[in-house]
Length: 174
Image (spheres, rainbow, N blue to C red):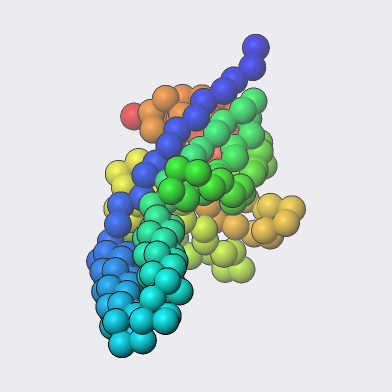
């Protein structure tokens, strides 16, 4: 029987993302006002300026929409795919790994992050998420990698059958 679970984790906007959105909107308003002033000063450029204003605000909308990020975890028969979804429309596969290849799995503490010599860390969840865990694996294209993600209880139950007990035994106990 096939095993299939999926979970979507919406990323919360931090101060950096909110400041960027405000900066984009202010810049769009300033550029729009300057183009409007140019169209008033030189009436022959009015139609071009109005098109440019529409382009500026459309571009601002697209840049703000890029700040809407979600991660989707997909567990299929012992393989986890993590996709980044931007503005609920654009999807990009970030990593795929087999649970049998996991070398270590533990709860992740953001206040005391795990540092493993020679491994790069990839975070695919909200900072401070209570479900956050990390897996250490030797990935064929990413190399030695620590993947931080936040599977819910249902996803963890699905994962438990594919990770060797010696590695995941303590992690899956309540």
